[in-house]
Figure 1 (spheres, rainbow, N blue to C red):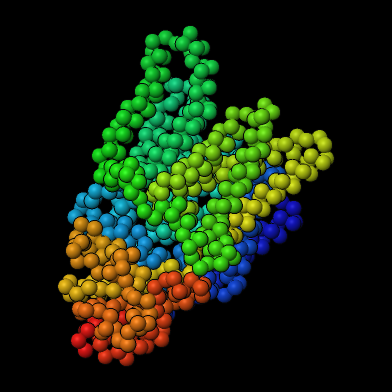
Figure 2 (figure 1 turned 90 degrees about the vertical axis):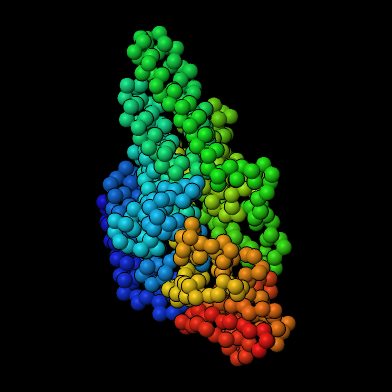
Amino acid sequence: MNRRWQIVSAVTALAAVGFVGSVLTTPPATGYESSLHDAYPPQTWVGFGLALVGSLALLFRSVTTGRPGWRYGVGTLASVYAVFFALPLFRGYYIYGTPMSDAFYHFGIVRDVLETGAVPETGYPATHVLYTTLTTITGVPVRVLQPVVTFCFFLLFVGSCFLLGLSFFGRRGGLATLGAATPLVFVTNHLMTLPWLFALPFLPLSLALAHRWSGRRCSSRTGLVGVTFVCGIALVFYHPVTALVTVLALVVYVGVVAAPSLRRRLPLRRDEANAAVGRAYAVPVRYPLVLGIAGILWYLSISHFTHFLERVVTNDIDGGAASYASTAQRTSYSAWELVWEFLVLEWGTVLVYTVVGAGIAAVILSRVLRGRDNCLERLCVTQYGAGVGVAVFFVGSRMLSRNVVRINNYTVIGAILLLGLAITGLVSYRDAAADRWKRQGATTILRGLCVTVIVVALLAGAVAYEDDRHVTHATMAGAEWHHENHDSGIDTRAFRMSEQLQRYFEGTTGADPDDRQFHRSLEGYQLPTRLGYDDHGSVGDVYENETYLVTKTADIEWARNRPPDRRAEIDHYTAADLARLRADPAAHRIYSNGDVSVWLVAPDE
């Protein structure tokens, strides 16, 4: 390693140590804070950024030159990411997410398993069994385990992409694909309990196993059959829809790689085979058929999945990605605010990878037209195209979610694969080119791709932790107090709360659907804008019957951080409205912990 790279290594190490040291020495939050980023001094994030840049630079140096050093870069990157994932614990948050997060629903199922010993009927029990096992063995609360589990699954995703690149392109290609997978492309989703994201690492892993399987002789496939079977079971039980997408990826692989190879080799094997060899070859062929039939029957036995199919057939799915995107034109966001909020903060990383993948795919397609491509190039382009097709299908059919990042997860894997292919191919082209201008051109494009990955890593690190997206201990204490002490005959009004909290406190089987305190969207559970003081002089004039009001510091801060024009379109209240509520004789505060208050409104007073 020359002196310049020794300096890069030293700066990377110092930056990583500085980031970790700054996190450890900064005291936790003492009250509600809107931004996790603002909680740390600027030098903390400078250290984090330098550590990311230096680690990825060392990794890509090994890819482009064949020199050692990538292990040091990967190790440093993993250490920095480990602390980054644990930042909510260091800040003293109850959990990263909002009171409306699905994590509370999943943790409610974990409570069911711990209390009853049985897993409630769900379409993906693996996540709940995993958390139950970990909290039983370690004694650590399930909410504290979330950063640990999410970090481990991120490592699994990166490792699976490395194995995929290794099996497709060799050692250099594996490292290039690993580098392309290291940014937190799915941004804030990486930091929360999401079964679809936990299942995603098994997609590239399944492709890697399929490629190794297709390249082996029949007698050496027994171990791979077992590994593939275990991988498939894990994938289905983590998230059935992701399992279906994985099946599509495998079908694409068979169509592009395995089927042409089998057409060439089967006649030769048929001439050489005896009865024993024929039976040995027949076993792997029958496995997919048997497993496929069993899988279809199992899917149809899941009530969640059959209900989902019914909604697809009847087109009874609200809030899909198409409708979510179409609402942008009906809001008061300015053009700049739309670009910043959606194209940069929410979808920026996925958008960059999608555009880069499309550019690489276009180059490969031009090679296809000239007859200069190979089988793996066609496979990577087809996988990327299939990912785009799946995303378009989900958007057009208003299915699954309005989460644009989620519905593009297959596209992102295709883009990662294309980046690994492009970087590997450019290195080989540069080394083989005799013309100086061709070498310089390849080097320039190669550097551009590596810099793109580094920029995406920096962008992802900057936007992964969203403002006002954490739950404090005070919020949970107030919600739990109200849950345990409320009168079920009195309605509750709250802002940015959901029924998931009730499931978290009682479990999904113990929650009484007729005694719901919170709901994320139904109007009958929401606080009115300005607490009703826009149209009434007292909250006693707003309600006909006794009503609970739950107010939080987080509500005021969240609304304050929205764009000014946007506040007119959302239900919110201000500190001045809360001061009027304190002085309102019709409102009686029955609980307060500083950040959360519970009020009982008596209309007759």
